[in-house]
Image 1 (cartoon, rainbow, N blue to C red):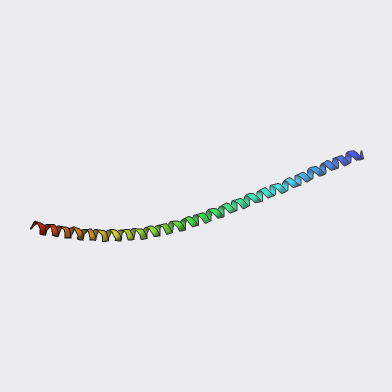
Image 2: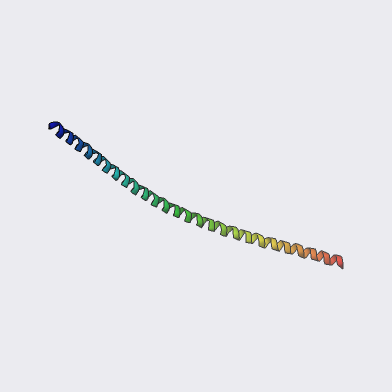
Length: 96
């Protein structure tokens, strides 16, 4: 009788130990999931902010490049106009 009781108590102890360990595992998994969710949220926020900064810098660089390009085109058009005018004058002089 004592051996049956001891066996039942041993089995109960082993079951309760595995149950306690499984509860710890559940808590660990839950904490890991929460930590991962938090890290993902922070990473997404940082990525959004970085993307916004890069977009602003790209817009500024594009605006500056457009201004420089417009200025260069304007100078080139003036120079071409002067060259065409000189050539026309020379052609007119040659025709006279």
